[in-house]
Amino acid sequence: MLCIAEKHSVAKQLAIVLSDNAYTQTSIDKYTHAYTFTMTLQNVQQQMIITHGAGHAKNYEFTQNKLDSREFFKAPIHSKVTQYGTGLFKTIKKYINTATSLVLCQDNDREGEHIAWEAVEVASDSRKINIFPSVLPVVRTDYQKNIISEPSGGLSAKRARFSSLTKTELVNAFSNLSPLNTGTIEAVDIRQQLDLRIGYALSSLQNKNAGKLNSRMDEVARNSKKPRYTFGTCQIPTLGLCYLKNHKNFSEDCKLSLKSAIPQQLESKPLPLLIGYEESVKCQAQLKQSPYVQITCTSSDTTQHPPPPPNTIELQKYLKNINASTVMKTAETLYQKGLISYPRTETRQFTNDMNNTKLTQNLINGTYNNYVQKLINNNQFKSNLSRIESNNKSKKLQNDESHPPIHPLKCVSLTGLEQTVFDAICRLYLASVSFDCIRTKHEYTTKVGQLEFKATQTYIKEPGFTEILHDQKKEDIPDFKEAQKVEVQNLTLNNIEHTACDEKMTQLKLIEKMDQYGIGTDATIAEHIDNVQNRGYVNQKMQVEAAGKVISELYQRVNYNFIATTFRAMTEAGLREICEGKRKAVTVYKDVIELSMKLFDDVNYNLSSMQ
Image (cartoon, rainbow, N blue to C red):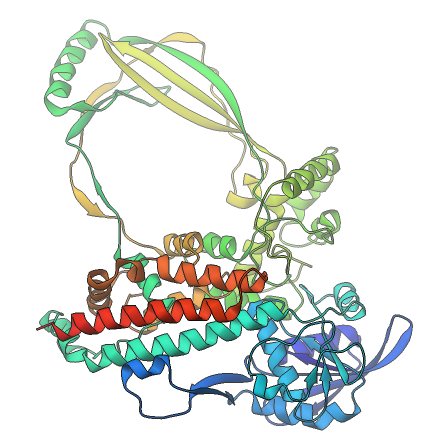
């Protein structure tokens, strides 16, 4: 059984887990290795060879070298082996002829499906490959002469799909191999072609007009590092989200504030500045006669249920102060070490194979021992968990049908970033299986003359899941009679300044917006943020730089949909429909290319008329 993983670290971990660390390693070259061992699968002893690639083994490039900018939309392209694919070619050629089956162990996501197909293409150079019951995808048909989809014949190629590198899940995956997803392969192939053509065409056009674009910058920016004006179908709307910041206007109002012991401060409703001043004089006069006011208090409890378990976006949001790309690289390392489930997932719904009682117990004796012990020793833990799971599965939560939510698999001692990310995953998961948070809300009301003052204070009655998620503790709730007199310590008049201010973009807000508008996927959002920073369009604080401003203004003038999110979201929706079998890949490709060519012509006209 010849097994191909997406990267070396996963191949090695597969070998360690499945062989119980009893494998033989062979080095094909400096970067490519194979692991050989025997194991029993479904009562049959299997000779296993696990090797790997390094991401995409093939990509597209233009057949001609020199092209005019607009010609990139139609010029011939061909697939070529990447620098990372040569090792995979050597390995497959070495082992394919003696293999009894080809098992594709690439990541169970959209890109992983296409990388698995690339391995099939590579293998077909040496042997006839049978992908039955999958149908042959309509991609690179010239390379399919030795690939079939028939009930028998050829070397069978199927997928091993798993979400964690644990023995139980891996044995189950290798015992229940599944067919390749043709729609997903076609969607990624179309996306690669579109990104290549649109990116090259518009990047070429922009850089030909770099002098005109540079002239739009101030002198300091113009004399600094010269930017490369690249275009990417996710890169530009990501920049657009940073550029199109919200503006909020505050009215010229004021509030009167009463300071007391409990509650500490009550406020009036917003008042026009002149009226507020007049009311302040009246209140001061009344409080001189008697500094006491009668405050009424109403009390009520509110219940907040635990959040669903985390997906990629929620993990990045929780760790908002760390670069999103760094978070994901660290999470990948934790996954490859067998400490967490697969971290690139859209799913927030508990899956049927998640044993949440066992997963929670796995965290005993770790950093969270006290909390976990308290949780599982609670007599209501099992019934509460059953209720949570039932509610979670009945809601229409995100589920990519490929991977479960991110969850920890065992406790270990870590340091640095690995500990920080692992801690976040543990906290987010434990919160999802914890008790409700109950808060007590006190609403206070009083009057000075005819002016009403109000205050609301909230206290933690039972912290529940917020104890592990936000380190919140149970709070003392003041015993306030329904109506009692309280001394006013001070009365102040506070202006609400009127000003127009930019709402600054942050990494957290950007991730939320990209997720909301479908810019990229859970697996690629961090990469797109890195791209706009590396191009010099935005800085590390997500504020737009001079080059980013020039490009944003260009596309805002030409077609707002491209600097906004509409174009990429439309493309992403088309790719999803290909995956789901709702649309043909060729139709989506044609629609996007036609729209992009129209954009190109509009940009070209705008740049031509620019002084």
